[in-house]
Length: 143
Image 1: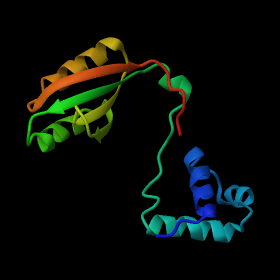
Image 2: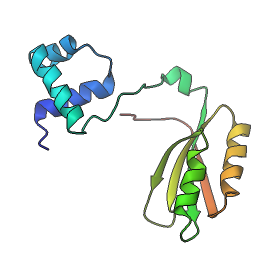
Image 3: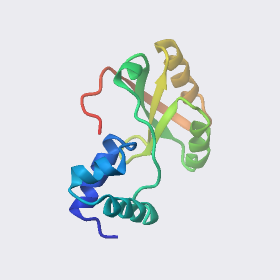
Image 4: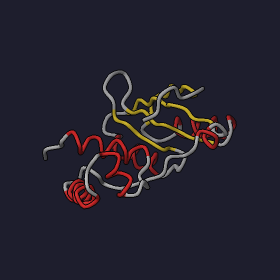
């Protein structure tokens, strides 16, 4: 599916504010409202845009503790560990990675004590051989 420069600009604007009115998107892109609406519908139909979500404020996020947890799993344990991690609501993102570790989980918790319990729980999951965690102190760039 071809993505034009205007499509990329539209996606960038929507990434910043998915609730921006089509009329404002059109004005910023120098296109008609009808054209922008058609582009959005095409990008959705082509699967480029799969949904819309919220972006939490820095003020809210600063009250939470976040961490990256690198996870090494036993052979053939990926499906079970992934399912167990999916059931933990504090796991906000899970990546498969290459290298020494197999997975990277991003966790969000209300306190260090809660985060500590979560990390211990992940380490105790069947199929998890080893974890290494890093608490996120601040976010320098978020797109």
